[in-house]
Image (cartoon, rainbow, N blue to C red; front, side):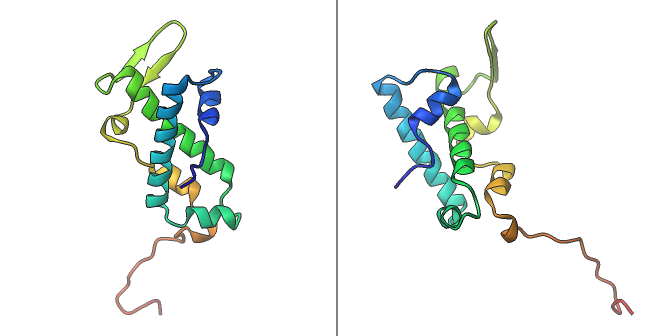
Length: 130
């Protein structure tokens, strides 16, 4: 099944010219995994994109960030919580060490406004609102 982003999209966001063959294959596999996770958590995502309720660009952004999270874990190591160098700093969240999943904020971004459960809190009053 198609992915929401390409390896070139991820490389661009990482600020590199591209991946070698092994890295490209790894990134492609990560994008396939991420896309499947996105579809599992939001089964209607492809339909929402087709119906223009969610932009393909937003799905690409989320897929890239999730793949980059995996790449950082692979490169830095699961047991590392942060690493700082003069040129850059990397921080790994606890979620990254237990597997990739969408955050509540990402699910919210990828859910069309018209389908979100909204409204005000309600009160139950014995006897009603007379």
